[in-house]
Image (cartoon, rainbow, N blue to C red; front, side, top):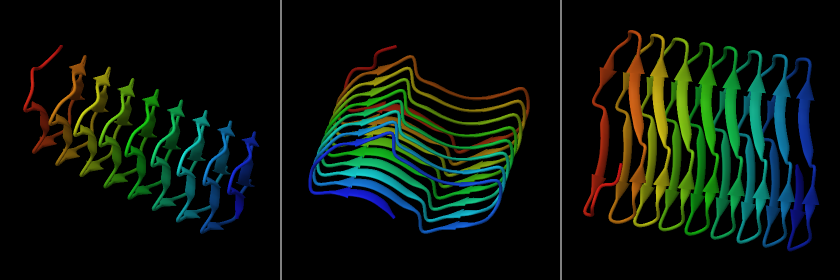
Length: 219
Protein backbone atom coordinates (compact mmCIF):
# COMPACT_ATOMS: atom_id res chain seq x y z
CA UNK A 1 0.00 0.00 0.00
CA UNK A 2 1.52 3.29 -1.16
CA UNK A 3 -0.98 6.15 -1.17
CA UNK A 4 -1.73 9.84 -0.51
CA UNK A 5 -5.16 10.49 1.03
CA UNK A 6 -7.34 13.66 1.05
CA UNK A 7 -5.14 16.18 -0.80
CA UNK A 8 -1.43 16.97 -1.25
CA UNK A 9 0.87 16.04 -4.14
CA UNK A 10 2.72 12.81 -4.93
CA UNK A 11 5.93 13.10 -6.97
CA UNK A 12 7.92 10.21 -8.41
CA UNK A 13 6.19 7.43 -6.49
CA UNK A 14 7.67 3.95 -6.93
CA UNK A 15 6.10 0.67 -5.73
CA UNK A 16 7.88 -2.33 -7.20
CA UNK A 17 9.23 -5.88 -6.84
CA UNK A 18 12.64 -6.30 -8.49
CA UNK A 19 14.34 -9.50 -9.75
CA UNK A 20 11.73 -12.15 -8.92
CA UNK A 21 9.14 -12.78 -6.26
CA UNK A 22 5.37 -12.26 -6.21
CA UNK A 23 3.32 -9.08 -5.73
CA UNK A 24 -0.24 -9.49 -4.41
CA UNK A 25 -2.88 -6.77 -4.08
CA UNK A 26 -0.60 -3.82 -4.78
CA UNK A 27 -2.19 -0.37 -4.41
CA UNK A 28 -0.57 2.92 -5.48
CA UNK A 29 -3.05 5.80 -5.46
CA UNK A 30 -3.88 9.45 -4.72
CA UNK A 31 -7.34 9.86 -3.16
CA UNK A 32 -9.62 12.95 -3.04
CA UNK A 33 -7.45 15.58 -4.78
CA UNK A 34 -3.80 16.38 -5.35
CA UNK A 35 -1.44 15.65 -8.27
CA UNK A 36 0.53 12.49 -9.08
CA UNK A 37 3.72 12.79 -11.12
CA UNK A 38 5.76 9.95 -12.60
CA UNK A 39 4.09 7.14 -10.67
CA UNK A 40 5.58 3.68 -11.17
CA UNK A 41 4.02 0.39 -10.03
CA UNK A 42 5.85 -2.57 -11.53
CA UNK A 43 7.29 -6.08 -11.18
CA UNK A 44 10.68 -6.38 -12.90
CA UNK A 45 12.43 -9.52 -14.22
CA UNK A 46 9.95 -12.27 -13.35
CA UNK A 47 7.38 -12.98 -10.68
CA UNK A 48 3.59 -12.55 -10.65
CA UNK A 49 1.43 -9.44 -10.08
CA UNK A 50 -2.12 -9.95 -8.79
CA UNK A 51 -4.81 -7.27 -8.46
CA UNK A 52 -2.58 -4.26 -9.12
CA UNK A 53 -4.23 -0.85 -8.75
CA UNK A 54 -2.68 2.49 -9.77
CA UNK A 55 -5.21 5.33 -9.73
CA UNK A 56 -6.13 8.96 -8.98
CA UNK A 57 -9.63 9.24 -7.47
CA UNK A 58 -11.99 12.26 -7.34
CA UNK A 59 -9.86 14.99 -9.02
CA UNK A 60 -6.23 15.87 -9.57
CA UNK A 61 -3.83 15.19 -12.46
CA UNK A 62 -1.78 12.07 -13.26
CA UNK A 63 1.38 12.46 -15.35
CA UNK A 64 3.48 9.66 -16.81
CA UNK A 65 1.84 6.79 -14.95
CA UNK A 66 3.40 3.37 -15.50
CA UNK A 67 1.91 0.02 -14.39
CA UNK A 68 3.76 -2.89 -15.99
CA UNK A 69 5.37 -6.33 -15.71
CA UNK A 70 8.56 -6.45 -17.86
CA UNK A 71 10.33 -9.61 -19.06
CA UNK A 72 7.98 -12.42 -18.03
CA UNK A 73 5.52 -13.21 -15.28
CA UNK A 74 1.73 -12.90 -15.15
CA UNK A 75 -0.47 -9.83 -14.57
CA UNK A 76 -4.00 -10.39 -13.24
CA UNK A 77 -6.72 -7.76 -12.87
CA UNK A 78 -4.53 -4.72 -13.51
CA UNK A 79 -6.26 -1.33 -13.12
CA UNK A 80 -4.75 2.05 -14.10
CA UNK A 81 -7.35 4.83 -14.10
CA UNK A 82 -8.39 8.41 -13.28
CA UNK A 83 -11.92 8.55 -11.84
CA UNK A 84 -14.38 11.50 -11.69
CA UNK A 85 -12.32 14.31 -13.28
CA UNK A 86 -8.71 15.27 -13.81
CA UNK A 87 -6.27 14.63 -16.66
CA UNK A 88 -4.16 11.56 -17.50
CA UNK A 89 -0.97 12.08 -19.51
CA UNK A 90 1.23 9.37 -21.00
CA UNK A 91 -0.39 6.43 -19.21
CA UNK A 92 1.23 3.04 -19.81
CA UNK A 93 -0.22 -0.33 -18.73
CA UNK A 94 1.61 -3.22 -20.39
CA UNK A 95 3.21 -6.66 -20.19
CA UNK A 96 6.43 -6.80 -22.22
CA UNK A 97 8.30 -9.81 -23.61
CA UNK A 98 6.04 -12.70 -22.57
CA UNK A 99 3.57 -13.56 -19.85
CA UNK A 100 -0.22 -13.24 -19.68
CA UNK A 101 -2.45 -10.21 -19.05
CA UNK A 102 -5.94 -10.83 -17.66
CA UNK A 103 -8.71 -8.25 -17.28
CA UNK A 104 -6.55 -5.18 -17.91
CA UNK A 105 -8.33 -1.82 -17.49
CA UNK A 106 -6.89 1.59 -18.46
CA UNK A 107 -9.55 4.31 -18.48
CA UNK A 108 -10.65 7.86 -17.66
CA UNK A 109 -14.21 7.94 -16.27
CA UNK A 110 -16.71 10.85 -16.11
CA UNK A 111 -14.70 13.73 -17.61
CA UNK A 112 -11.10 14.79 -18.16
CA UNK A 113 -8.65 14.17 -21.01
CA UNK A 114 -6.47 11.14 -21.81
CA UNK A 115 -3.21 11.73 -23.69
CA UNK A 116 -0.92 9.09 -25.20
CA UNK A 117 -2.53 6.11 -23.49
CA UNK A 118 -0.84 2.75 -24.13
CA UNK A 119 -2.26 -0.65 -23.10
CA UNK A 120 -0.41 -3.49 -24.81
CA UNK A 121 1.22 -6.93 -24.67
CA UNK A 122 4.45 -6.99 -26.70
CA UNK A 123 6.34 -9.98 -28.16
CA UNK A 124 4.10 -12.88 -27.12
CA UNK A 125 1.71 -13.78 -24.36
CA UNK A 126 -2.10 -13.57 -24.17
CA UNK A 127 -4.36 -10.57 -23.53
CA UNK A 128 -7.83 -11.27 -22.09
CA UNK A 129 -10.64 -8.75 -21.68
CA UNK A 130 -8.55 -5.64 -22.29
CA UNK A 131 -10.38 -2.33 -21.83
CA UNK A 132 -9.00 1.10 -22.79
CA UNK A 133 -11.71 3.79 -22.83
CA UNK A 134 -12.90 7.32 -22.01
CA UNK A 135 -16.47 7.33 -20.69
CA UNK A 136 -19.03 10.19 -20.55
CA UNK A 137 -16.99 13.10 -21.97
CA UNK A 138 -13.41 14.18 -22.42
CA UNK A 139 -10.86 13.65 -25.21
CA UNK A 140 -8.68 10.65 -26.08
CA UNK A 141 -5.42 11.35 -27.93
CA UNK A 142 -3.13 8.77 -29.51
CA UNK A 143 -4.65 5.75 -27.80
CA UNK A 144 -2.91 2.43 -28.46
CA UNK A 145 -4.27 -1.00 -27.48
CA UNK A 146 -2.42 -3.80 -29.24
CA UNK A 147 -0.79 -7.24 -29.19
CA UNK A 148 2.43 -7.22 -31.19
CA UNK A 149 4.36 -10.13 -32.76
CA UNK A 150 2.15 -13.15 -32.08
CA UNK A 151 -0.39 -14.66 -29.74
CA UNK A 152 -4.05 -14.02 -29.02
CA UNK A 153 -6.24 -11.02 -28.08
CA UNK A 154 -9.65 -11.76 -26.54
CA UNK A 155 -12.51 -9.31 -26.08
CA UNK A 156 -10.50 -6.13 -26.65
CA UNK A 157 -12.42 -2.87 -26.15
CA UNK A 158 -11.10 0.59 -27.11
CA UNK A 159 -13.85 3.22 -27.15
CA UNK A 160 -15.06 6.74 -26.36
CA UNK A 161 -18.67 6.75 -25.10
CA UNK A 162 -21.22 9.60 -24.92
CA UNK A 163 -19.21 12.57 -26.23
CA UNK A 164 -15.63 13.71 -26.69
CA UNK A 165 -13.13 13.21 -29.51
CA UNK A 166 -10.84 10.27 -30.40
CA UNK A 167 -7.56 11.06 -32.17
CA UNK A 168 -5.17 8.55 -33.74
CA UNK A 169 -6.63 5.47 -32.08
CA UNK A 170 -4.85 2.19 -32.81
CA UNK A 171 -6.19 -1.28 -31.91
CA UNK A 172 -4.29 -4.00 -33.74
CA UNK A 173 -2.65 -7.44 -33.78
CA UNK A 174 0.55 -7.41 -35.85
CA UNK A 175 2.56 -10.30 -37.36
CA UNK A 176 0.31 -13.26 -36.50
CA UNK A 177 -2.01 -14.34 -33.75
CA UNK A 178 -5.80 -14.21 -33.42
CA UNK A 179 -8.16 -11.34 -32.55
CA UNK A 180 -11.52 -12.22 -31.01
CA UNK A 181 -14.47 -9.88 -30.47
CA UNK A 182 -12.62 -6.61 -30.98
CA UNK A 183 -14.66 -3.45 -30.36
CA UNK A 184 -13.41 -0.01 -31.35
CA UNK A 185 -16.03 2.76 -31.42
CA UNK A 186 -17.16 6.28 -30.60
CA UNK A 187 -20.83 6.30 -29.52
CA UNK A 188 -23.36 9.17 -29.31
CA UNK A 189 -21.24 12.19 -30.26
CA UNK A 190 -17.66 13.31 -30.80
CA UNK A 191 -15.25 12.88 -33.69
CA UNK A 192 -12.98 9.97 -34.69
CA UNK A 193 -9.70 10.80 -36.43
CA UNK A 194 -7.28 8.35 -38.07
CA UNK A 195 -8.71 5.21 -36.47
CA UNK A 196 -6.87 1.96 -37.16
CA UNK A 197 -8.19 -1.52 -36.30
CA UNK A 198 -6.27 -4.23 -38.12
CA UNK A 199 -4.57 -7.63 -38.18
CA UNK A 200 -1.35 -7.51 -40.19
CA UNK A 201 0.66 -10.35 -41.75
CA UNK A 202 -1.42 -13.40 -40.84
CA UNK A 203 -3.72 -14.56 -38.08
CA UNK A 204 -7.50 -14.51 -37.78
CA UNK A 205 -9.93 -11.64 -37.02
CA UNK A 206 -13.27 -12.56 -35.42
CA UNK A 207 -16.23 -10.25 -34.88
CA UNK A 208 -14.34 -6.99 -35.31
CA UNK A 209 -16.34 -3.79 -34.82
CA UNK A 210 -15.03 -0.33 -35.77
CA UNK A 211 -17.77 2.28 -35.93
CA UNK A 212 -18.89 5.85 -35.31
CA UNK A 213 -22.52 5.94 -34.13
CA UNK A 214 -25.16 8.70 -34.20
CA UNK A 215 -23.15 11.59 -35.62
CA UNK A 216 -20.93 12.59 -38.53
CA UNK A 217 -17.77 10.60 -39.24
CA UNK A 218 -14.36 12.26 -39.58
CA UNK A 219 -11.27 10.66 -41.02
